[in-house]
Length: 232
Image (cartoon, rainbow, N blue to C red; front, side, top):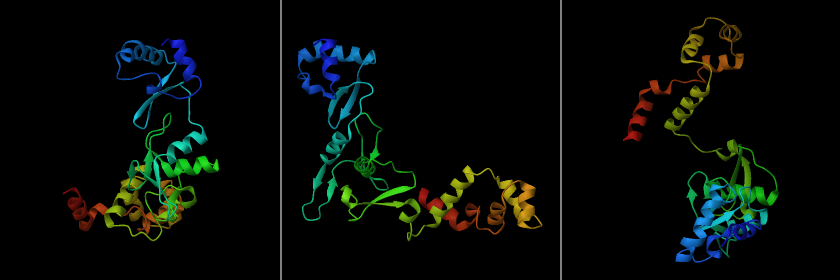
């Protein structure tokens, strides 16, 4: 098979390797595989993993909306009683069902792809998609509800260790140093005077001086013990 013949097929869309010939045969290894490697090296085609198969496409190829939905739903098992479309692929405890989309980013949320493809709208980082049926494997569009990240966590109790980790994360992202925090708490004057003195907002100064923000969790023996037990 020549380069021109392969390019003619690839120009029409994704081509699975087995459609070009028997990938275990001598003819494939001698005549087809070298041509595919040359085209890849020249940047004229790209190789993709489609489930357990290998495919080839043009460098800028992307699945259409219909192809993407068919690909995703083809990996689901339908529960006739509940109407759930149960994902049979990879699943993450926090993110839910995940999938690698040929030509796309690896490990993408299945519910996110189905919701955005079906509605034609993009989700923000604060949007969370949850199954109304409460089945963690369900990705049926009619069973998906969209909520904001804060609402999704509403009612959930945070452990002391979780609170400590949140505090450490906020401190790393903050421009207010530990030295400034100590200075704010020792400052004599109003919150506005403290804010002006340290060059921060009044709200930030008030939150730190009241103890609501920048708590020193690690200084408390209870939290230290939790960390040690978690590490063990």
